[in-house]
Length: 267
Image 1 (cartoon, one colour):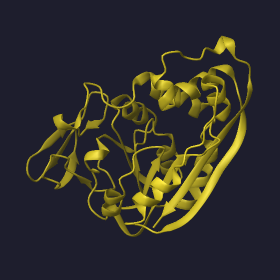
Image 2 (cartoon, rainbow, N blue to C red):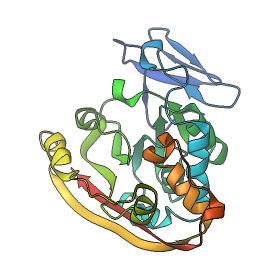
Image 3 (cartoon, rainbow, N blue to C red):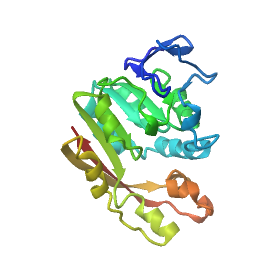
Image 4 (cartoon, rainbow, N blue to C red):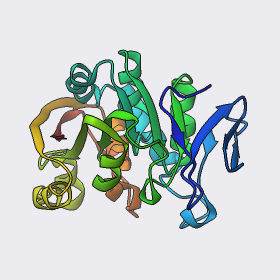
């Protein structure tokens, strides 16, 4: 399926427009990529891989999908949809695809990129009409210069120089980071503490050379989380994914868990 947003070849030193025709994506320099049996394009180059299976594992992305299905990310979706309606959106680090899939369902056009093949496969299965790509975003974004209205990064990668390149004049970056209170009950229960991190100074230092801050707002509240949801919430965090000792549902009771996202809008 052709993308409404023009794509860019990821072969180093190329950058020509990448055109999808049937099961193949090809640029004018004759670099080509084949659609996999599971329906996705993997644009990774050999030097883009730090391991044989880069990005989040299937277990991690499936845990995140289950938390999505439990309604955990709906408040963030509801905050973003009216702000980006009918826009061309590039979701950098899209994961299992819920946020971009929801935006496209609301009328946006989108491309989602992630380093994890299991995440992109999961996104494609649920939203097959969206263009999903396996890409190392740290090496560059696979869309043509000035081709999107919105760059979205939800607790994911931040490349402000590349974000500026791909945005049309007047375009915006929606940068979503975990707030200080996000999952604080789980962090206190597992780690024995809930420590706030100073993310603001690093964000400002990275983005101010390229953008001006247009808006900053929070999406915060609590939901009752069943034991299995608590386990998945923890497994879906980077700390939880690396933990050697995992939470088990049989030790837990349903309880309120805090969600807390900080959204920075740069233009």
